[in-house]
Amino acid sequence: MRRNMSVLLAALLALALCLSGCGSNETPSAAEPAADSAPAEETQEPEEAEVPEGSEEASDQEKADEAAALIDAIYVQQRTDETDAQCAAAKAAWDALTDAQKELVEGEEADPDYFGRDTGDASKDDPRNQDEIRENELLVVSFGTSFNDSRVADIKGIEDALAAANPDWSVRRAFTAQIIINHVQARDDEKIDNMQQALDRAAASGVKNLVVQPTHLMHGAEYDELMEAVEGCKDKFESVKVAEPLLGEVGTDATVINADKKAVAEAVTAEAVKDAGYDSLDAAKEDGVAFVYLGHGTSHTAKVSYSQMQTQMNDLGYDNVFIGTVEGEPEETACEAVIEAVAGGGYRKVILRPLMVVAGDHANNDMAGGDEDSWKSMFTASGKFDSVDVQIAGLGRIPAIQDLYVAHTAAVME
View 1: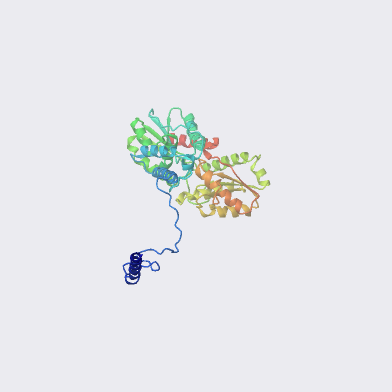
View 2: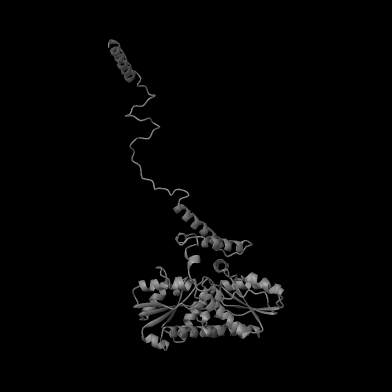
């Protein structure tokens, strides 16, 4: 018993000595944490939970981003030796996505509508890139569109009319927008020649006489680029001639009009009035209807053509017809200016229609789209009109317009 008591006293004495004498700086107390230790209770901003690598969410976004990068890679204006492979890779990546993953696609140009939008049946089109060309070729050059139905109705419509009028000539196609060529090739596996490809194809096929018919509206930037390409290959053919674009010669100022502009003004207005269900333009005017024809607009000196078209409408007595442009150049064709002009004329109903050869992206989105900056949305938001309707139809599908192109081609052939 005494021995046990001695052992207990010795243990208590050792504990007391440790508590008092061993309190050195090497061992921090519970109340004072070491300097390199985080406080047990510290107020911090909650961090966003990171998606674990390899998780389903990360995999979906990664696959969508990969497809977006491949789509952005073909949204270029320059064709290279890798273009065909890049188009195939972009479409393969898109097709491999689930519907949910496709909704996540977002890039500089890529979005779910790039391949996902239904623009019609591409199989109804003819790229007219055949090699079997005779000595006489009629090359129809367009800016182009990725909207299949519009390409068939507007561009192919003009090409078919030219082919019917010139049975002794091989009609072929070229687009000047490589971006559109790539889009159509990747999405629909339809290969359309760019300008250089078409000229090389003609030379390789032994074409002697080449006539180029631009479907462009005017002598603008696209027309200038076309002329540069033609100048660079003239020595490959016995004769090369370029026909007038739709509106003919530009002229110096807004007062200059010509027979081509008159024919276009009459043709598009007749179609607009008919599609709106009126017997005449005057009947539409009595009903408070104004027609607004929307062109692209340009900073090129040829922009005066839009002002000339407004002059032409006025000279024809088309008081309820107004010319606008997506780009707002010239200034009087900007949306705000046209809204004021239409409202100032006392018109309460508006019908928007493209003054473009093709009813493509600009017609469907910039004119008729649901975004707040579309012309339909801005006219509606102004609160100045009882109704704002749209007619999505390009100039190229109008028979009278097709006849005008045929006449331009015949003029240079003669």
